[in-house]
Image 1: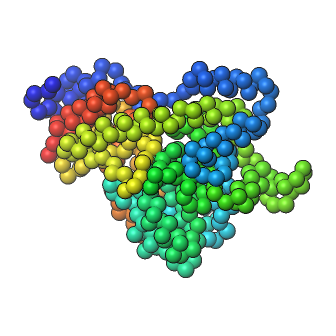
Image 2: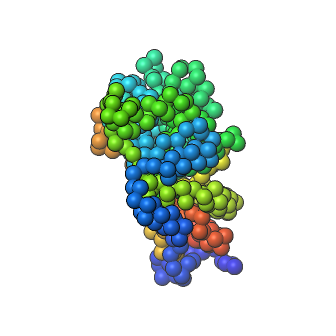
Image 3: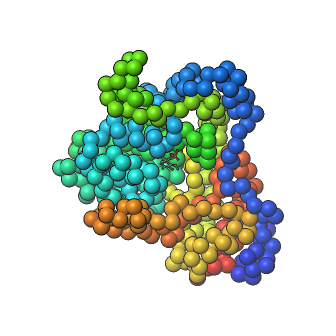
Amino acid sequence: MTTATPQASDLAINGGTPTFESNVPFMAVGLTKNDIAAATEVLESGMLRAASKCAALEEEFAKQSDANFGLTCANGTCALQLAYGSLLEPGDEVITPAWTFIATVSMLVAAQAKVVFCDVLEDSYQADPADIERLITPNTKAIAITHLYGIPVDIDAIQKLADKHNLKVIYDSAQAHLAEYNGKGIGAYGDACTYSFYATKNLGTGEGGMVTVNDEKLATDMGFLRSHGETGKYLHESIGFNYRMNDITGAIGLSKLETLGADTDRRRAVANIYASRIDNIQGVLRPIPTANSNPAWHLYTCRVDLDALTCTRDEFCAALNKEGVPTAVHYPKPLTEQPVFADIAKNSDTPKVAEKLATCVFCIPIHQNLTDDQANGICDALAKVANAFAN
Ligand SMILES: Cc1ncc(COP(=O)(O)O)c(C=O)c1O
């Protein structure tokens, strides 16, 4: 039990005793024995292409997400290409957040859509429905948004806008496996949800991805786009690509899916510890999930309250790292500041919230292997650093 308020000299970065003797792992990646056995079975079978394992992963993942159909694919970027390629036409105006991973937007550009950047909400980090509404024009055809960090967006508000203006909705769910909204899996909503199974994702197969949809014809069309527009043996009725998964990846995904529900619940339990503790730490602000949502907590992203502290975000994180708490910054820039989007940004409003988030967000560890003691220790370290830098 600490009795005195921590001073700067107590910080490990200044020679004090660190909160943890060794660093807490930031994430839990890798394969279990079961994952390896599942992959080995496929290797021994010689069936390396997409076959029964991919098919089973599609069925089971869609079911667990409350979607009707799933399509495995090579990665989350291909998943976006399948969704955009099936739902958008070149020249379509699409509203998308300035605060997300690059692929959500770069694949819109690749699909020849006209990108319109919207801002996000400061406490949930999710696309701001009011800003989306402000940006809708007669040419708007779709909304492409991310359930960022695994926190669902305000789906009710988005769906209302989509219904009113006849818009397609694509949810980039790369960080939101098994997240829920209004008591249902996020796959129940929108025209398509796209997922990444990159190694560090909540379900990480190395590389891999999935699209879920609820419309059977859309699922069929996406299947053609995924594989050379092949409608029959060597019969090609449209242009398609090769965005397929393989059965080794499929088997690893299926094996990991067996524990994904429990792993996600453990992330939620850690998030609950963080929420109850961080609310009492001056200078640190926690994510506030969208109403009626149950996040998947891919990342637990806090903000430093720069008005309450004498340090910058990077100085705060450097001190936290020395206490044994690794951090990450997702993301250091809003997309309007990425050189590749300079031409789009020139004609966009400044996303003020996204710009502010770039100066103050930082992620702390969250994963299924984190113990209650570690989660509490991380909060102790946050409090120690925040107190030492208090204004
Ligand atoms: C929000 C988001 N969208 C898309 C992707 C792209 O997924 P992948 O790396 O599997 O292509 C990622 C991966 O980091 C992501 O976080």
